[in-house]
Image (cartoon, rainbow, N blue to C red; front, side, top):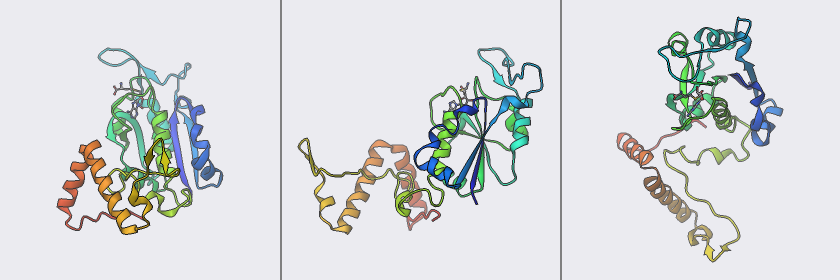
Amino acid sequence: MSFAATVLTLYPEMFPGPLGTSLAGRAMAQGIWSLDAVQMRDFATDRHRSVDDTPAGGGAGMVLRADVIARAVDAVARPGVPMLAMSPRGSPLTQERVRAIAAGPGVVILCGRFEGFDERLFEARDIEPVSIGDYILSGGEMGALVLLDACVRLLPGVMGAASSGVEESFESGLLEYPHYTRPVEWEGRTIPEVLRSGDHAAISAWRKARAEDDTRLRRPDLWERHVGARVKSPSGARQDRD
Ligand code: SAH
């Protein structure tokens, strides 16, 4: 069964955008996934087709109206399909969440604009706010593209080598080890000897050590969580699906 994505947006022309090319574009052409970009403005009821109004309490910008957006949400909601809203106030998106979404039937993504959504929308509907990082975009569309790209590459039949999703950064709670390729010598720098040794156990040990060192140095937040998780589960094994 194909993974069906629906995006609610004021700019449907931004889709599929970059997701129409390369891996995701090919997968879409093959019917592995589909994308429906829905114009939220079509759910406005007034002559001006307005979707936004001034913020209660004053302040700059405009806010997306709960009544109009809820009508759009209700029109596209499907049982068992998670509904996400792009918001810098949401929980940060993780590889674990991406994997769970990709394992399901699809996703509905709401893209905010202006100052974002009327908060009552989140109280009245089952909508999960998600953030793609601690910075502010001008709209949720880029976030939706990011989320969909991350999901689509995990769908069965999309990635070339079956294993290439498993060793990646974050899959084990660590950053991935660094990569090298030919030429063996470039600007006086060589590829680490061990990677040319053919000794698979040694290569594996080197990669594990580098993944741990790099995570500790570059992402102390991830490292702390990783060490904490290992303490909790003595086997240290965290098996993901597939
Ligand atoms: N006033 C809001 C920002 C609004 S930005 C605030 O300070 O929290 C406009 C829209 O862009 C948001 O509604 C959201 O849909 C999207 N957006 C901006 N930054 C984002 C981020 N880091 N992650 C996900 N969506 C984001």
